[in-house]
Image 1 (cartoon, rainbow, N blue to C red):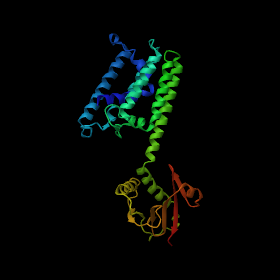
Image 2: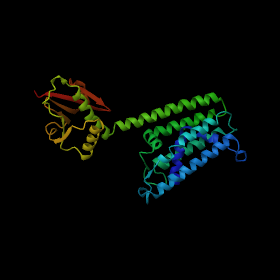
Image 3: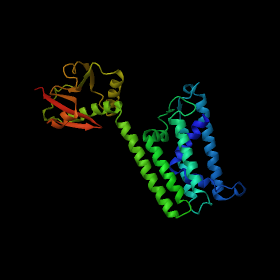
Image 4: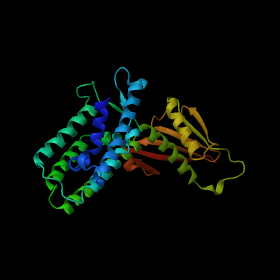
Length: 313
């Protein structure tokens, strides 16, 4: 597991790896009393301790025996801030003379090899290594995909060429890149989260209830029956449990979920909400039908829906 977690640490530092390596080159053991050297020693001790704990945990966990299947990033999510503090504290004076070509080659090779180890199953595995949901950096890298390689390698070249030139230019490029890089990566993550089957199901029942709440409440009277939501017979138990969780989370504890044959005549029907006054049906449409529909409708991440309202009185 050592090579996997070392690769993971390299990828965490990948957006600013050349500057990080240049910062480490300043370390002088003989001058360990200097502020920067003492800071680097403290950071190294913290990183090595957390890394050893993480590796030990992964070796002993059952899902990584006999073949590693997953890495945990929650133990080392502090590496990113520590790496950033290291490079920003080292930008106050020029780095020592270095070969920029070698720095580009070395940092690029580290990024490519580390990425291949984790996400291509290079050498040790037959496929990509799983990333635990508690690994924010791993998820960022995973969902950015090949764009992670392109962006980090491009920045490695630019940063390496700016080292020991204009400090303001290097700092401006670094900060601008980091803002854009993490904004882009987190947008990719959020888009993936919102576009999962689980989120779509929860969103569908939430939209149905919210639309039902917008109906005219002037007709509500004491004899109005509680709201019931009917779902198709072929709905999975997992989807039903997600609907129940969504209802409970939003405080709709008095709504009854009922399995029904509502989609037997119309497979496009997803859910139907009924009380004594109204019946509101949620249907999924094609994009073409969505554009010509004159009913209340909404779209979400490439899926199209409409509401069909019937008055029961």
